[in-house]
Amino acid sequence: MSNFDMIIKNGLVVSPAGFSQTDIAIKNGKIAALGKLDDFGEAAKVIDANGKYVMPGIIDGHVHIAAPFMGCTGPLDFYSASKAAALGGVTTIIDFTNTMPGDSVLKKIEDRKKEMQIAAIDYSIHAKIVEANAEILSEIKDIVSLGCPTLKMFTTYRRAGVMINDEDILKVMEEAKKCGARPGVHAEDNTLSEYNDDKFTQAGTTGWKYHYISKPPMVEALATKKMIDFSRAVGGELYIFHLTCGEALDEVIKAKKKNLPIYAETCIHYLELNKHVMDDSETGYRYICSPPLRDDKDRMALWQGLKEGVVSVVSSDNCLYDDNEKLGFLDKDKSGNIIPDYKKIANGVSGLEEKLMLLLTDGVGSGKMSISDVCNVCSVNPAKLFGMYPKKGIIQPGSDADIVIVDMNAKKTLSYKTLHYGINSSVYEGKRVSGVPIMTIRRGEIIAENGHFKAPKGSGQFIKRVL
Ligand code: URP
Ligand code: ZN
Image (tube, rainbow, N blue to C red):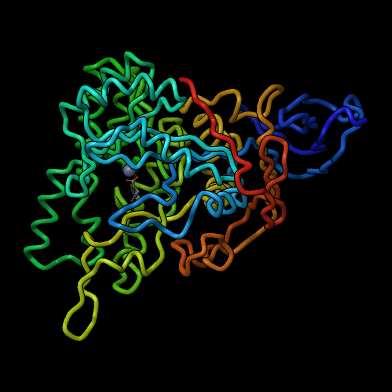
């Protein structure tokens, strides 16, 4: 009889403070012990991770899988998304309810939970709140009891029907504070961006690049400042989803100096991609996401924000569509040529599978981050901020054995051909990465190994979260 189900030996185990060569013993899906193999005795399986980093599994706390946007749902369901995720070192995702005005959010959580049952990685749900009538406000305590204590509100997308008004945001913030939930915001000022949309529509200037011109950093900074002030007025906490630019980051820095409990997330594409990719009239539409991509100055401010700990989390905001879906809503001229209009493109890009490889390459590889910084922004901080710590997000006795083994010497070219989204383009096409996850373990089970995905449909678990 083996003492343990699995031992990972000789690896460089990454923690929030650094890394050290430690052996890991796993039993019944949990980390059973850390130490020296000689002290452990037998295990059914021994993995030699010599020369490799052994990190907590990646928690991607911002993904949109099969989420309806302008009538598109993208190519992935929760099982195919699990494959891309596992091959990218991800062991837990958090998606969102698809709430529209009039919906019960509780009912939407149950609906989403059913859809997610086919996942092969662990999962949870943020509650999207689009209005704050008495019924919705009374649901917030039950949303918390269901294990989904994190909320998302949109200060924009009025025309898509999901923007919540300012009075309602304050009411939700109040109620969240009472019930132990944390509100989060997609912060872009709707009035300014709609003003620009209408101006460009009238002028006939609607090419792809007008997406970023219509939503300059000021649009995000204005809403970010307002949401921080709302949160300050209520005396609550606030999570800022997908912060993209120096101007909005400055608002977070000011808030942190006042010791306000404001937490900022950025996403991998805002660190990696420059807005001018949208200037290409052929392919620019592929990069349309909201908030939009920014310039190099903003990208550098975000890298700096990560290094200084002002930005706490890097998510993917994975929300991808193939070319047909992205282009499917555009009008055509008499000759059948599409008429570019950035407002008619489904928003979103990929990142679930690429994120860790890109952070290892352009963060660790270029000296902008240490390996424990990556562990903090991809595992430890999301686990803490989303209420899963120390069950998830850390390699320590008692925690779930969610682990990714990384080979910093392995190289790969990112392409729609090497990624696993089932679409025929990639926003990272041709990008060389150095630093690749070679094994992903979810609750003690190997779910991906050397590019092969092995987890059965439905083997993921819903994770009940508590803040
Ligand atoms: O462009 C994006 N980000 N699409 C997903 C929806 C959202 O705003 O997070
Ligand atoms: Zn958003």
